[in-house]
Amino acid sequence: MEDGDGFLFKFKGYYFYRKGIDIDFIENLDNFEIREDDVFIITYPKSGTVWLQQLLSLIYFEEHRRGTGKLQTVDQVPFFEYNFRQLDFGKRPSPRLFSTHLPYNLVPSGLKNKKGKIIYIYRNPKDVLSSYFHFGTNVILQVTSTFERFMEQFLEGRVIGSLWFDHIKGWYEHKSLFNIQFMMYEEINKDLRGSVLKICKFLGKELSEENIDAVMTKATFENMKYDPLANYDDIIKTAYGKNVKGHFLRKGTIGDWKNHMTVEQNERFDKIFQREMKDFPLKFIWDVNED
Ligand SMILES: Nc1ncnc2c1ncn2[C@@H]1O[C@H](COP(=O)(O)OS(=O)(=O)O)[C@@H](OP(=O)(O)O)[C@H]1O
Image 1 (cartoon, rainbow, N blue to C red):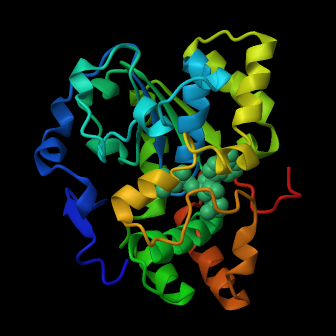
Image 2: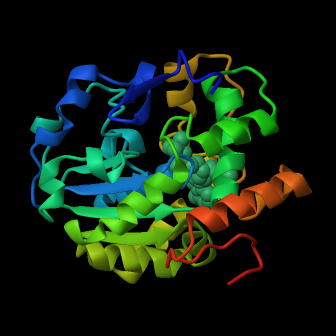
Image 3: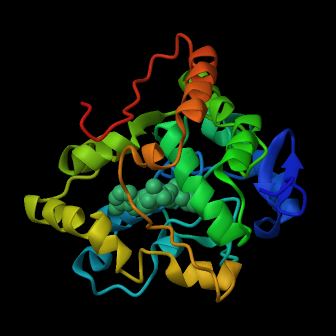
């Protein structure tokens, strides 16, 4: 984000979106009371958050599955640190569903006692960068930045969510403290049914075949893009302004980074990735034809 300044708020070494937070809430994150049946989706930005909000809404709420509900996904699975709707989390009925971009060291300490469940979604960081570039320039800043400049900011961690490498490594290296399931954006993209079943199993939810089919149909990119309860177009207008061009549901593909990065940029990225992620055990998928 341009020079980081106006848009970023740094707290305990981590960058938040300044306009979206309540500083009192952020300073007291540690003490937020966690319930046994709380569920958190945790992501670095642009890794599939809105998709998982839709999937959880569909898995938990019959009216959302049937298309008779009126609540947007952000009202059913609200952002934890960006409480746009100013919901009273303490008064929400169980099970509470949340989504967050927080790093492992800033989440409420109750989660560290394995109370609540976490689904951590990760995506190959070149596609994260490409998605973020469009979102950063079209939605958040609404100014033109070059990809080159944005890539530098991303690699320095001077963006909302801070450094991608720190986020994923922090969560993975501390996974034994949490009740956590890691899932890959690309795995959900390639095998939606298998992914829905995996999520249901982790959350202890049993859905009929018919309901699984309904979840899958409503969670495809095409259906979400035109679904006003799931596409965030309304939120963009409210939070960022009426003239914003960008969308949360942009391309939804694997390997779009190839349309953005030059050979040199790609080589530089690979070098840094290899240095930072040496010995990191999770697999990444960089191309749509890769298994
Ligand atoms: N159903 C479905 N299928 C495939 N891809 C999907 C889907 N829903 C969201 N997306 C893609 O997720 C990207 C946005 O990431 P986030 O939701 O994490 O963004 S944010 O952090 O909440 O701003 C963004 O990726 P890009 O298209 O590459 O920009 C979205 O298109």
